[in-house]
Amino acid sequence: MQYIFGPVPSRRLGFSLGIDLVPFKTCSLDCPYCQLGKTTHKTIQRQAYGSPEEIITELRDALQQHQKIDYITIGGSGEPTLSIHLGSLISRVKAMTAIPVAVLTNGTLLHSEEVRDELVAADVVIPSLDAVSEDVFARINRPHPRITVSRMIAGLKRFREVFPGKLWLEIMVVRGINDSLEEMGKMKSVIASIPFDKVQLNTPVRPSPDRELTPLTEQELTDLKDFLGEPCEVIAEFTGKQYVREKALQERMITMIKRHPLNLADLSASLGVPQAQLTRLICFLEDQGRIESRRHGDEWYYHLKR
Image 1 (tube, rainbow, N blue to C red):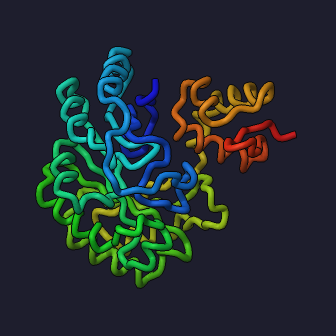
Image 2: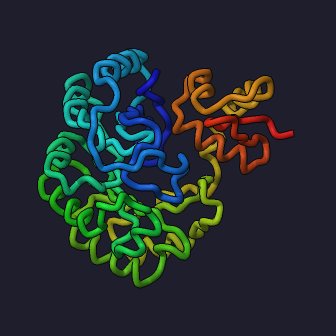
């Protein structure tokens, strides 16, 4: 399938059937901690990405497989609010099934009334907010030049006023960038001004393109949770269990590139796995020293490390 992936186990959403709504790494931010890699198309322009009819056809096929699905989650490889099909897709999904719809978003377009109106139909919306100071925001999220964190916060407040569903805020905390007492004190004030149903703390424990980033420890996140207060919780996984379920996929990938180096698109097509999931796995295998990437022309190919 081109647009549908999973269901994949999620700590927050149970078994989540994903919808990849925009092209790989099309986003309004270029966060250095993003495990999918560097943003290749940084934009705030909403466009008609993909084929809604193909998405609905693939979704119908997936639903007919009678797998356990707790949420249908719109997110994936880029920022879903950049698609002008978002609102109609949410409505069509909800007309097909009683399974609740969640949307993962970086929150940068919530200042738009059009985007807010489209998201209102979702059951759960999970926006991000990593910083509330403009200088810290610029460091940790590397936004499109026309995005400001003050505009994002205003958009969050307006959205909460009209959204009847569950609103869960995610904060990615990175040591030495946004973890200062001053910044988190400002974050606490913002959280107090918006009635979120949950505030979820994360830290980059998975491989990311910027190897210099340092995560907080489990105890430090727990202390920060206590500082921020209710309804804050820690969602970062420190046990490494997220890779166990991908063991079979790792071995399939290793077997393939042992015989012939492949690029990301080839691996995705051959394994039947979305590029977003493969990128996480590739980062892990590179960190383990099992594979390496080499540039050939305009493409990166993955080789078995010998």
